[in-house]
Image 1 (cartoon, rainbow, N blue to C red):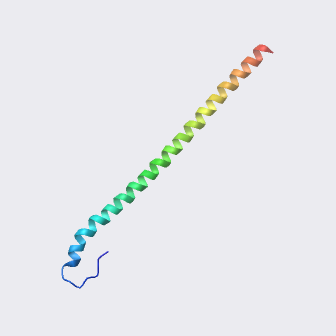
Image 2: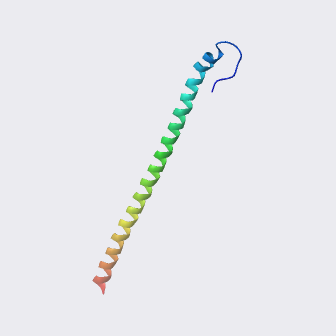
Image 3: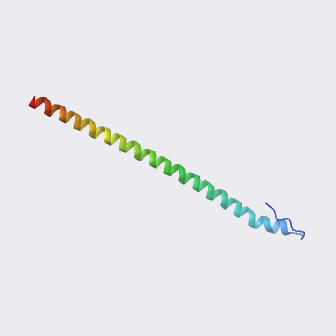
Length: 73
């Protein structure tokens, strides 16, 4: 992480700037990971909801068709 400089005190000076940068990178990476997880969770929830809704609609329509068909025949 440290820049290899010959001057005295450069390591300490770089350390002051490098630590926040490293922390920022870690925070950004963590935020990106969290965002990815959130996106995946949202997608999964949406897919599950769509599947459930489609299934419920299909079942309701199927029952309605069966009832109507039995009434007429």
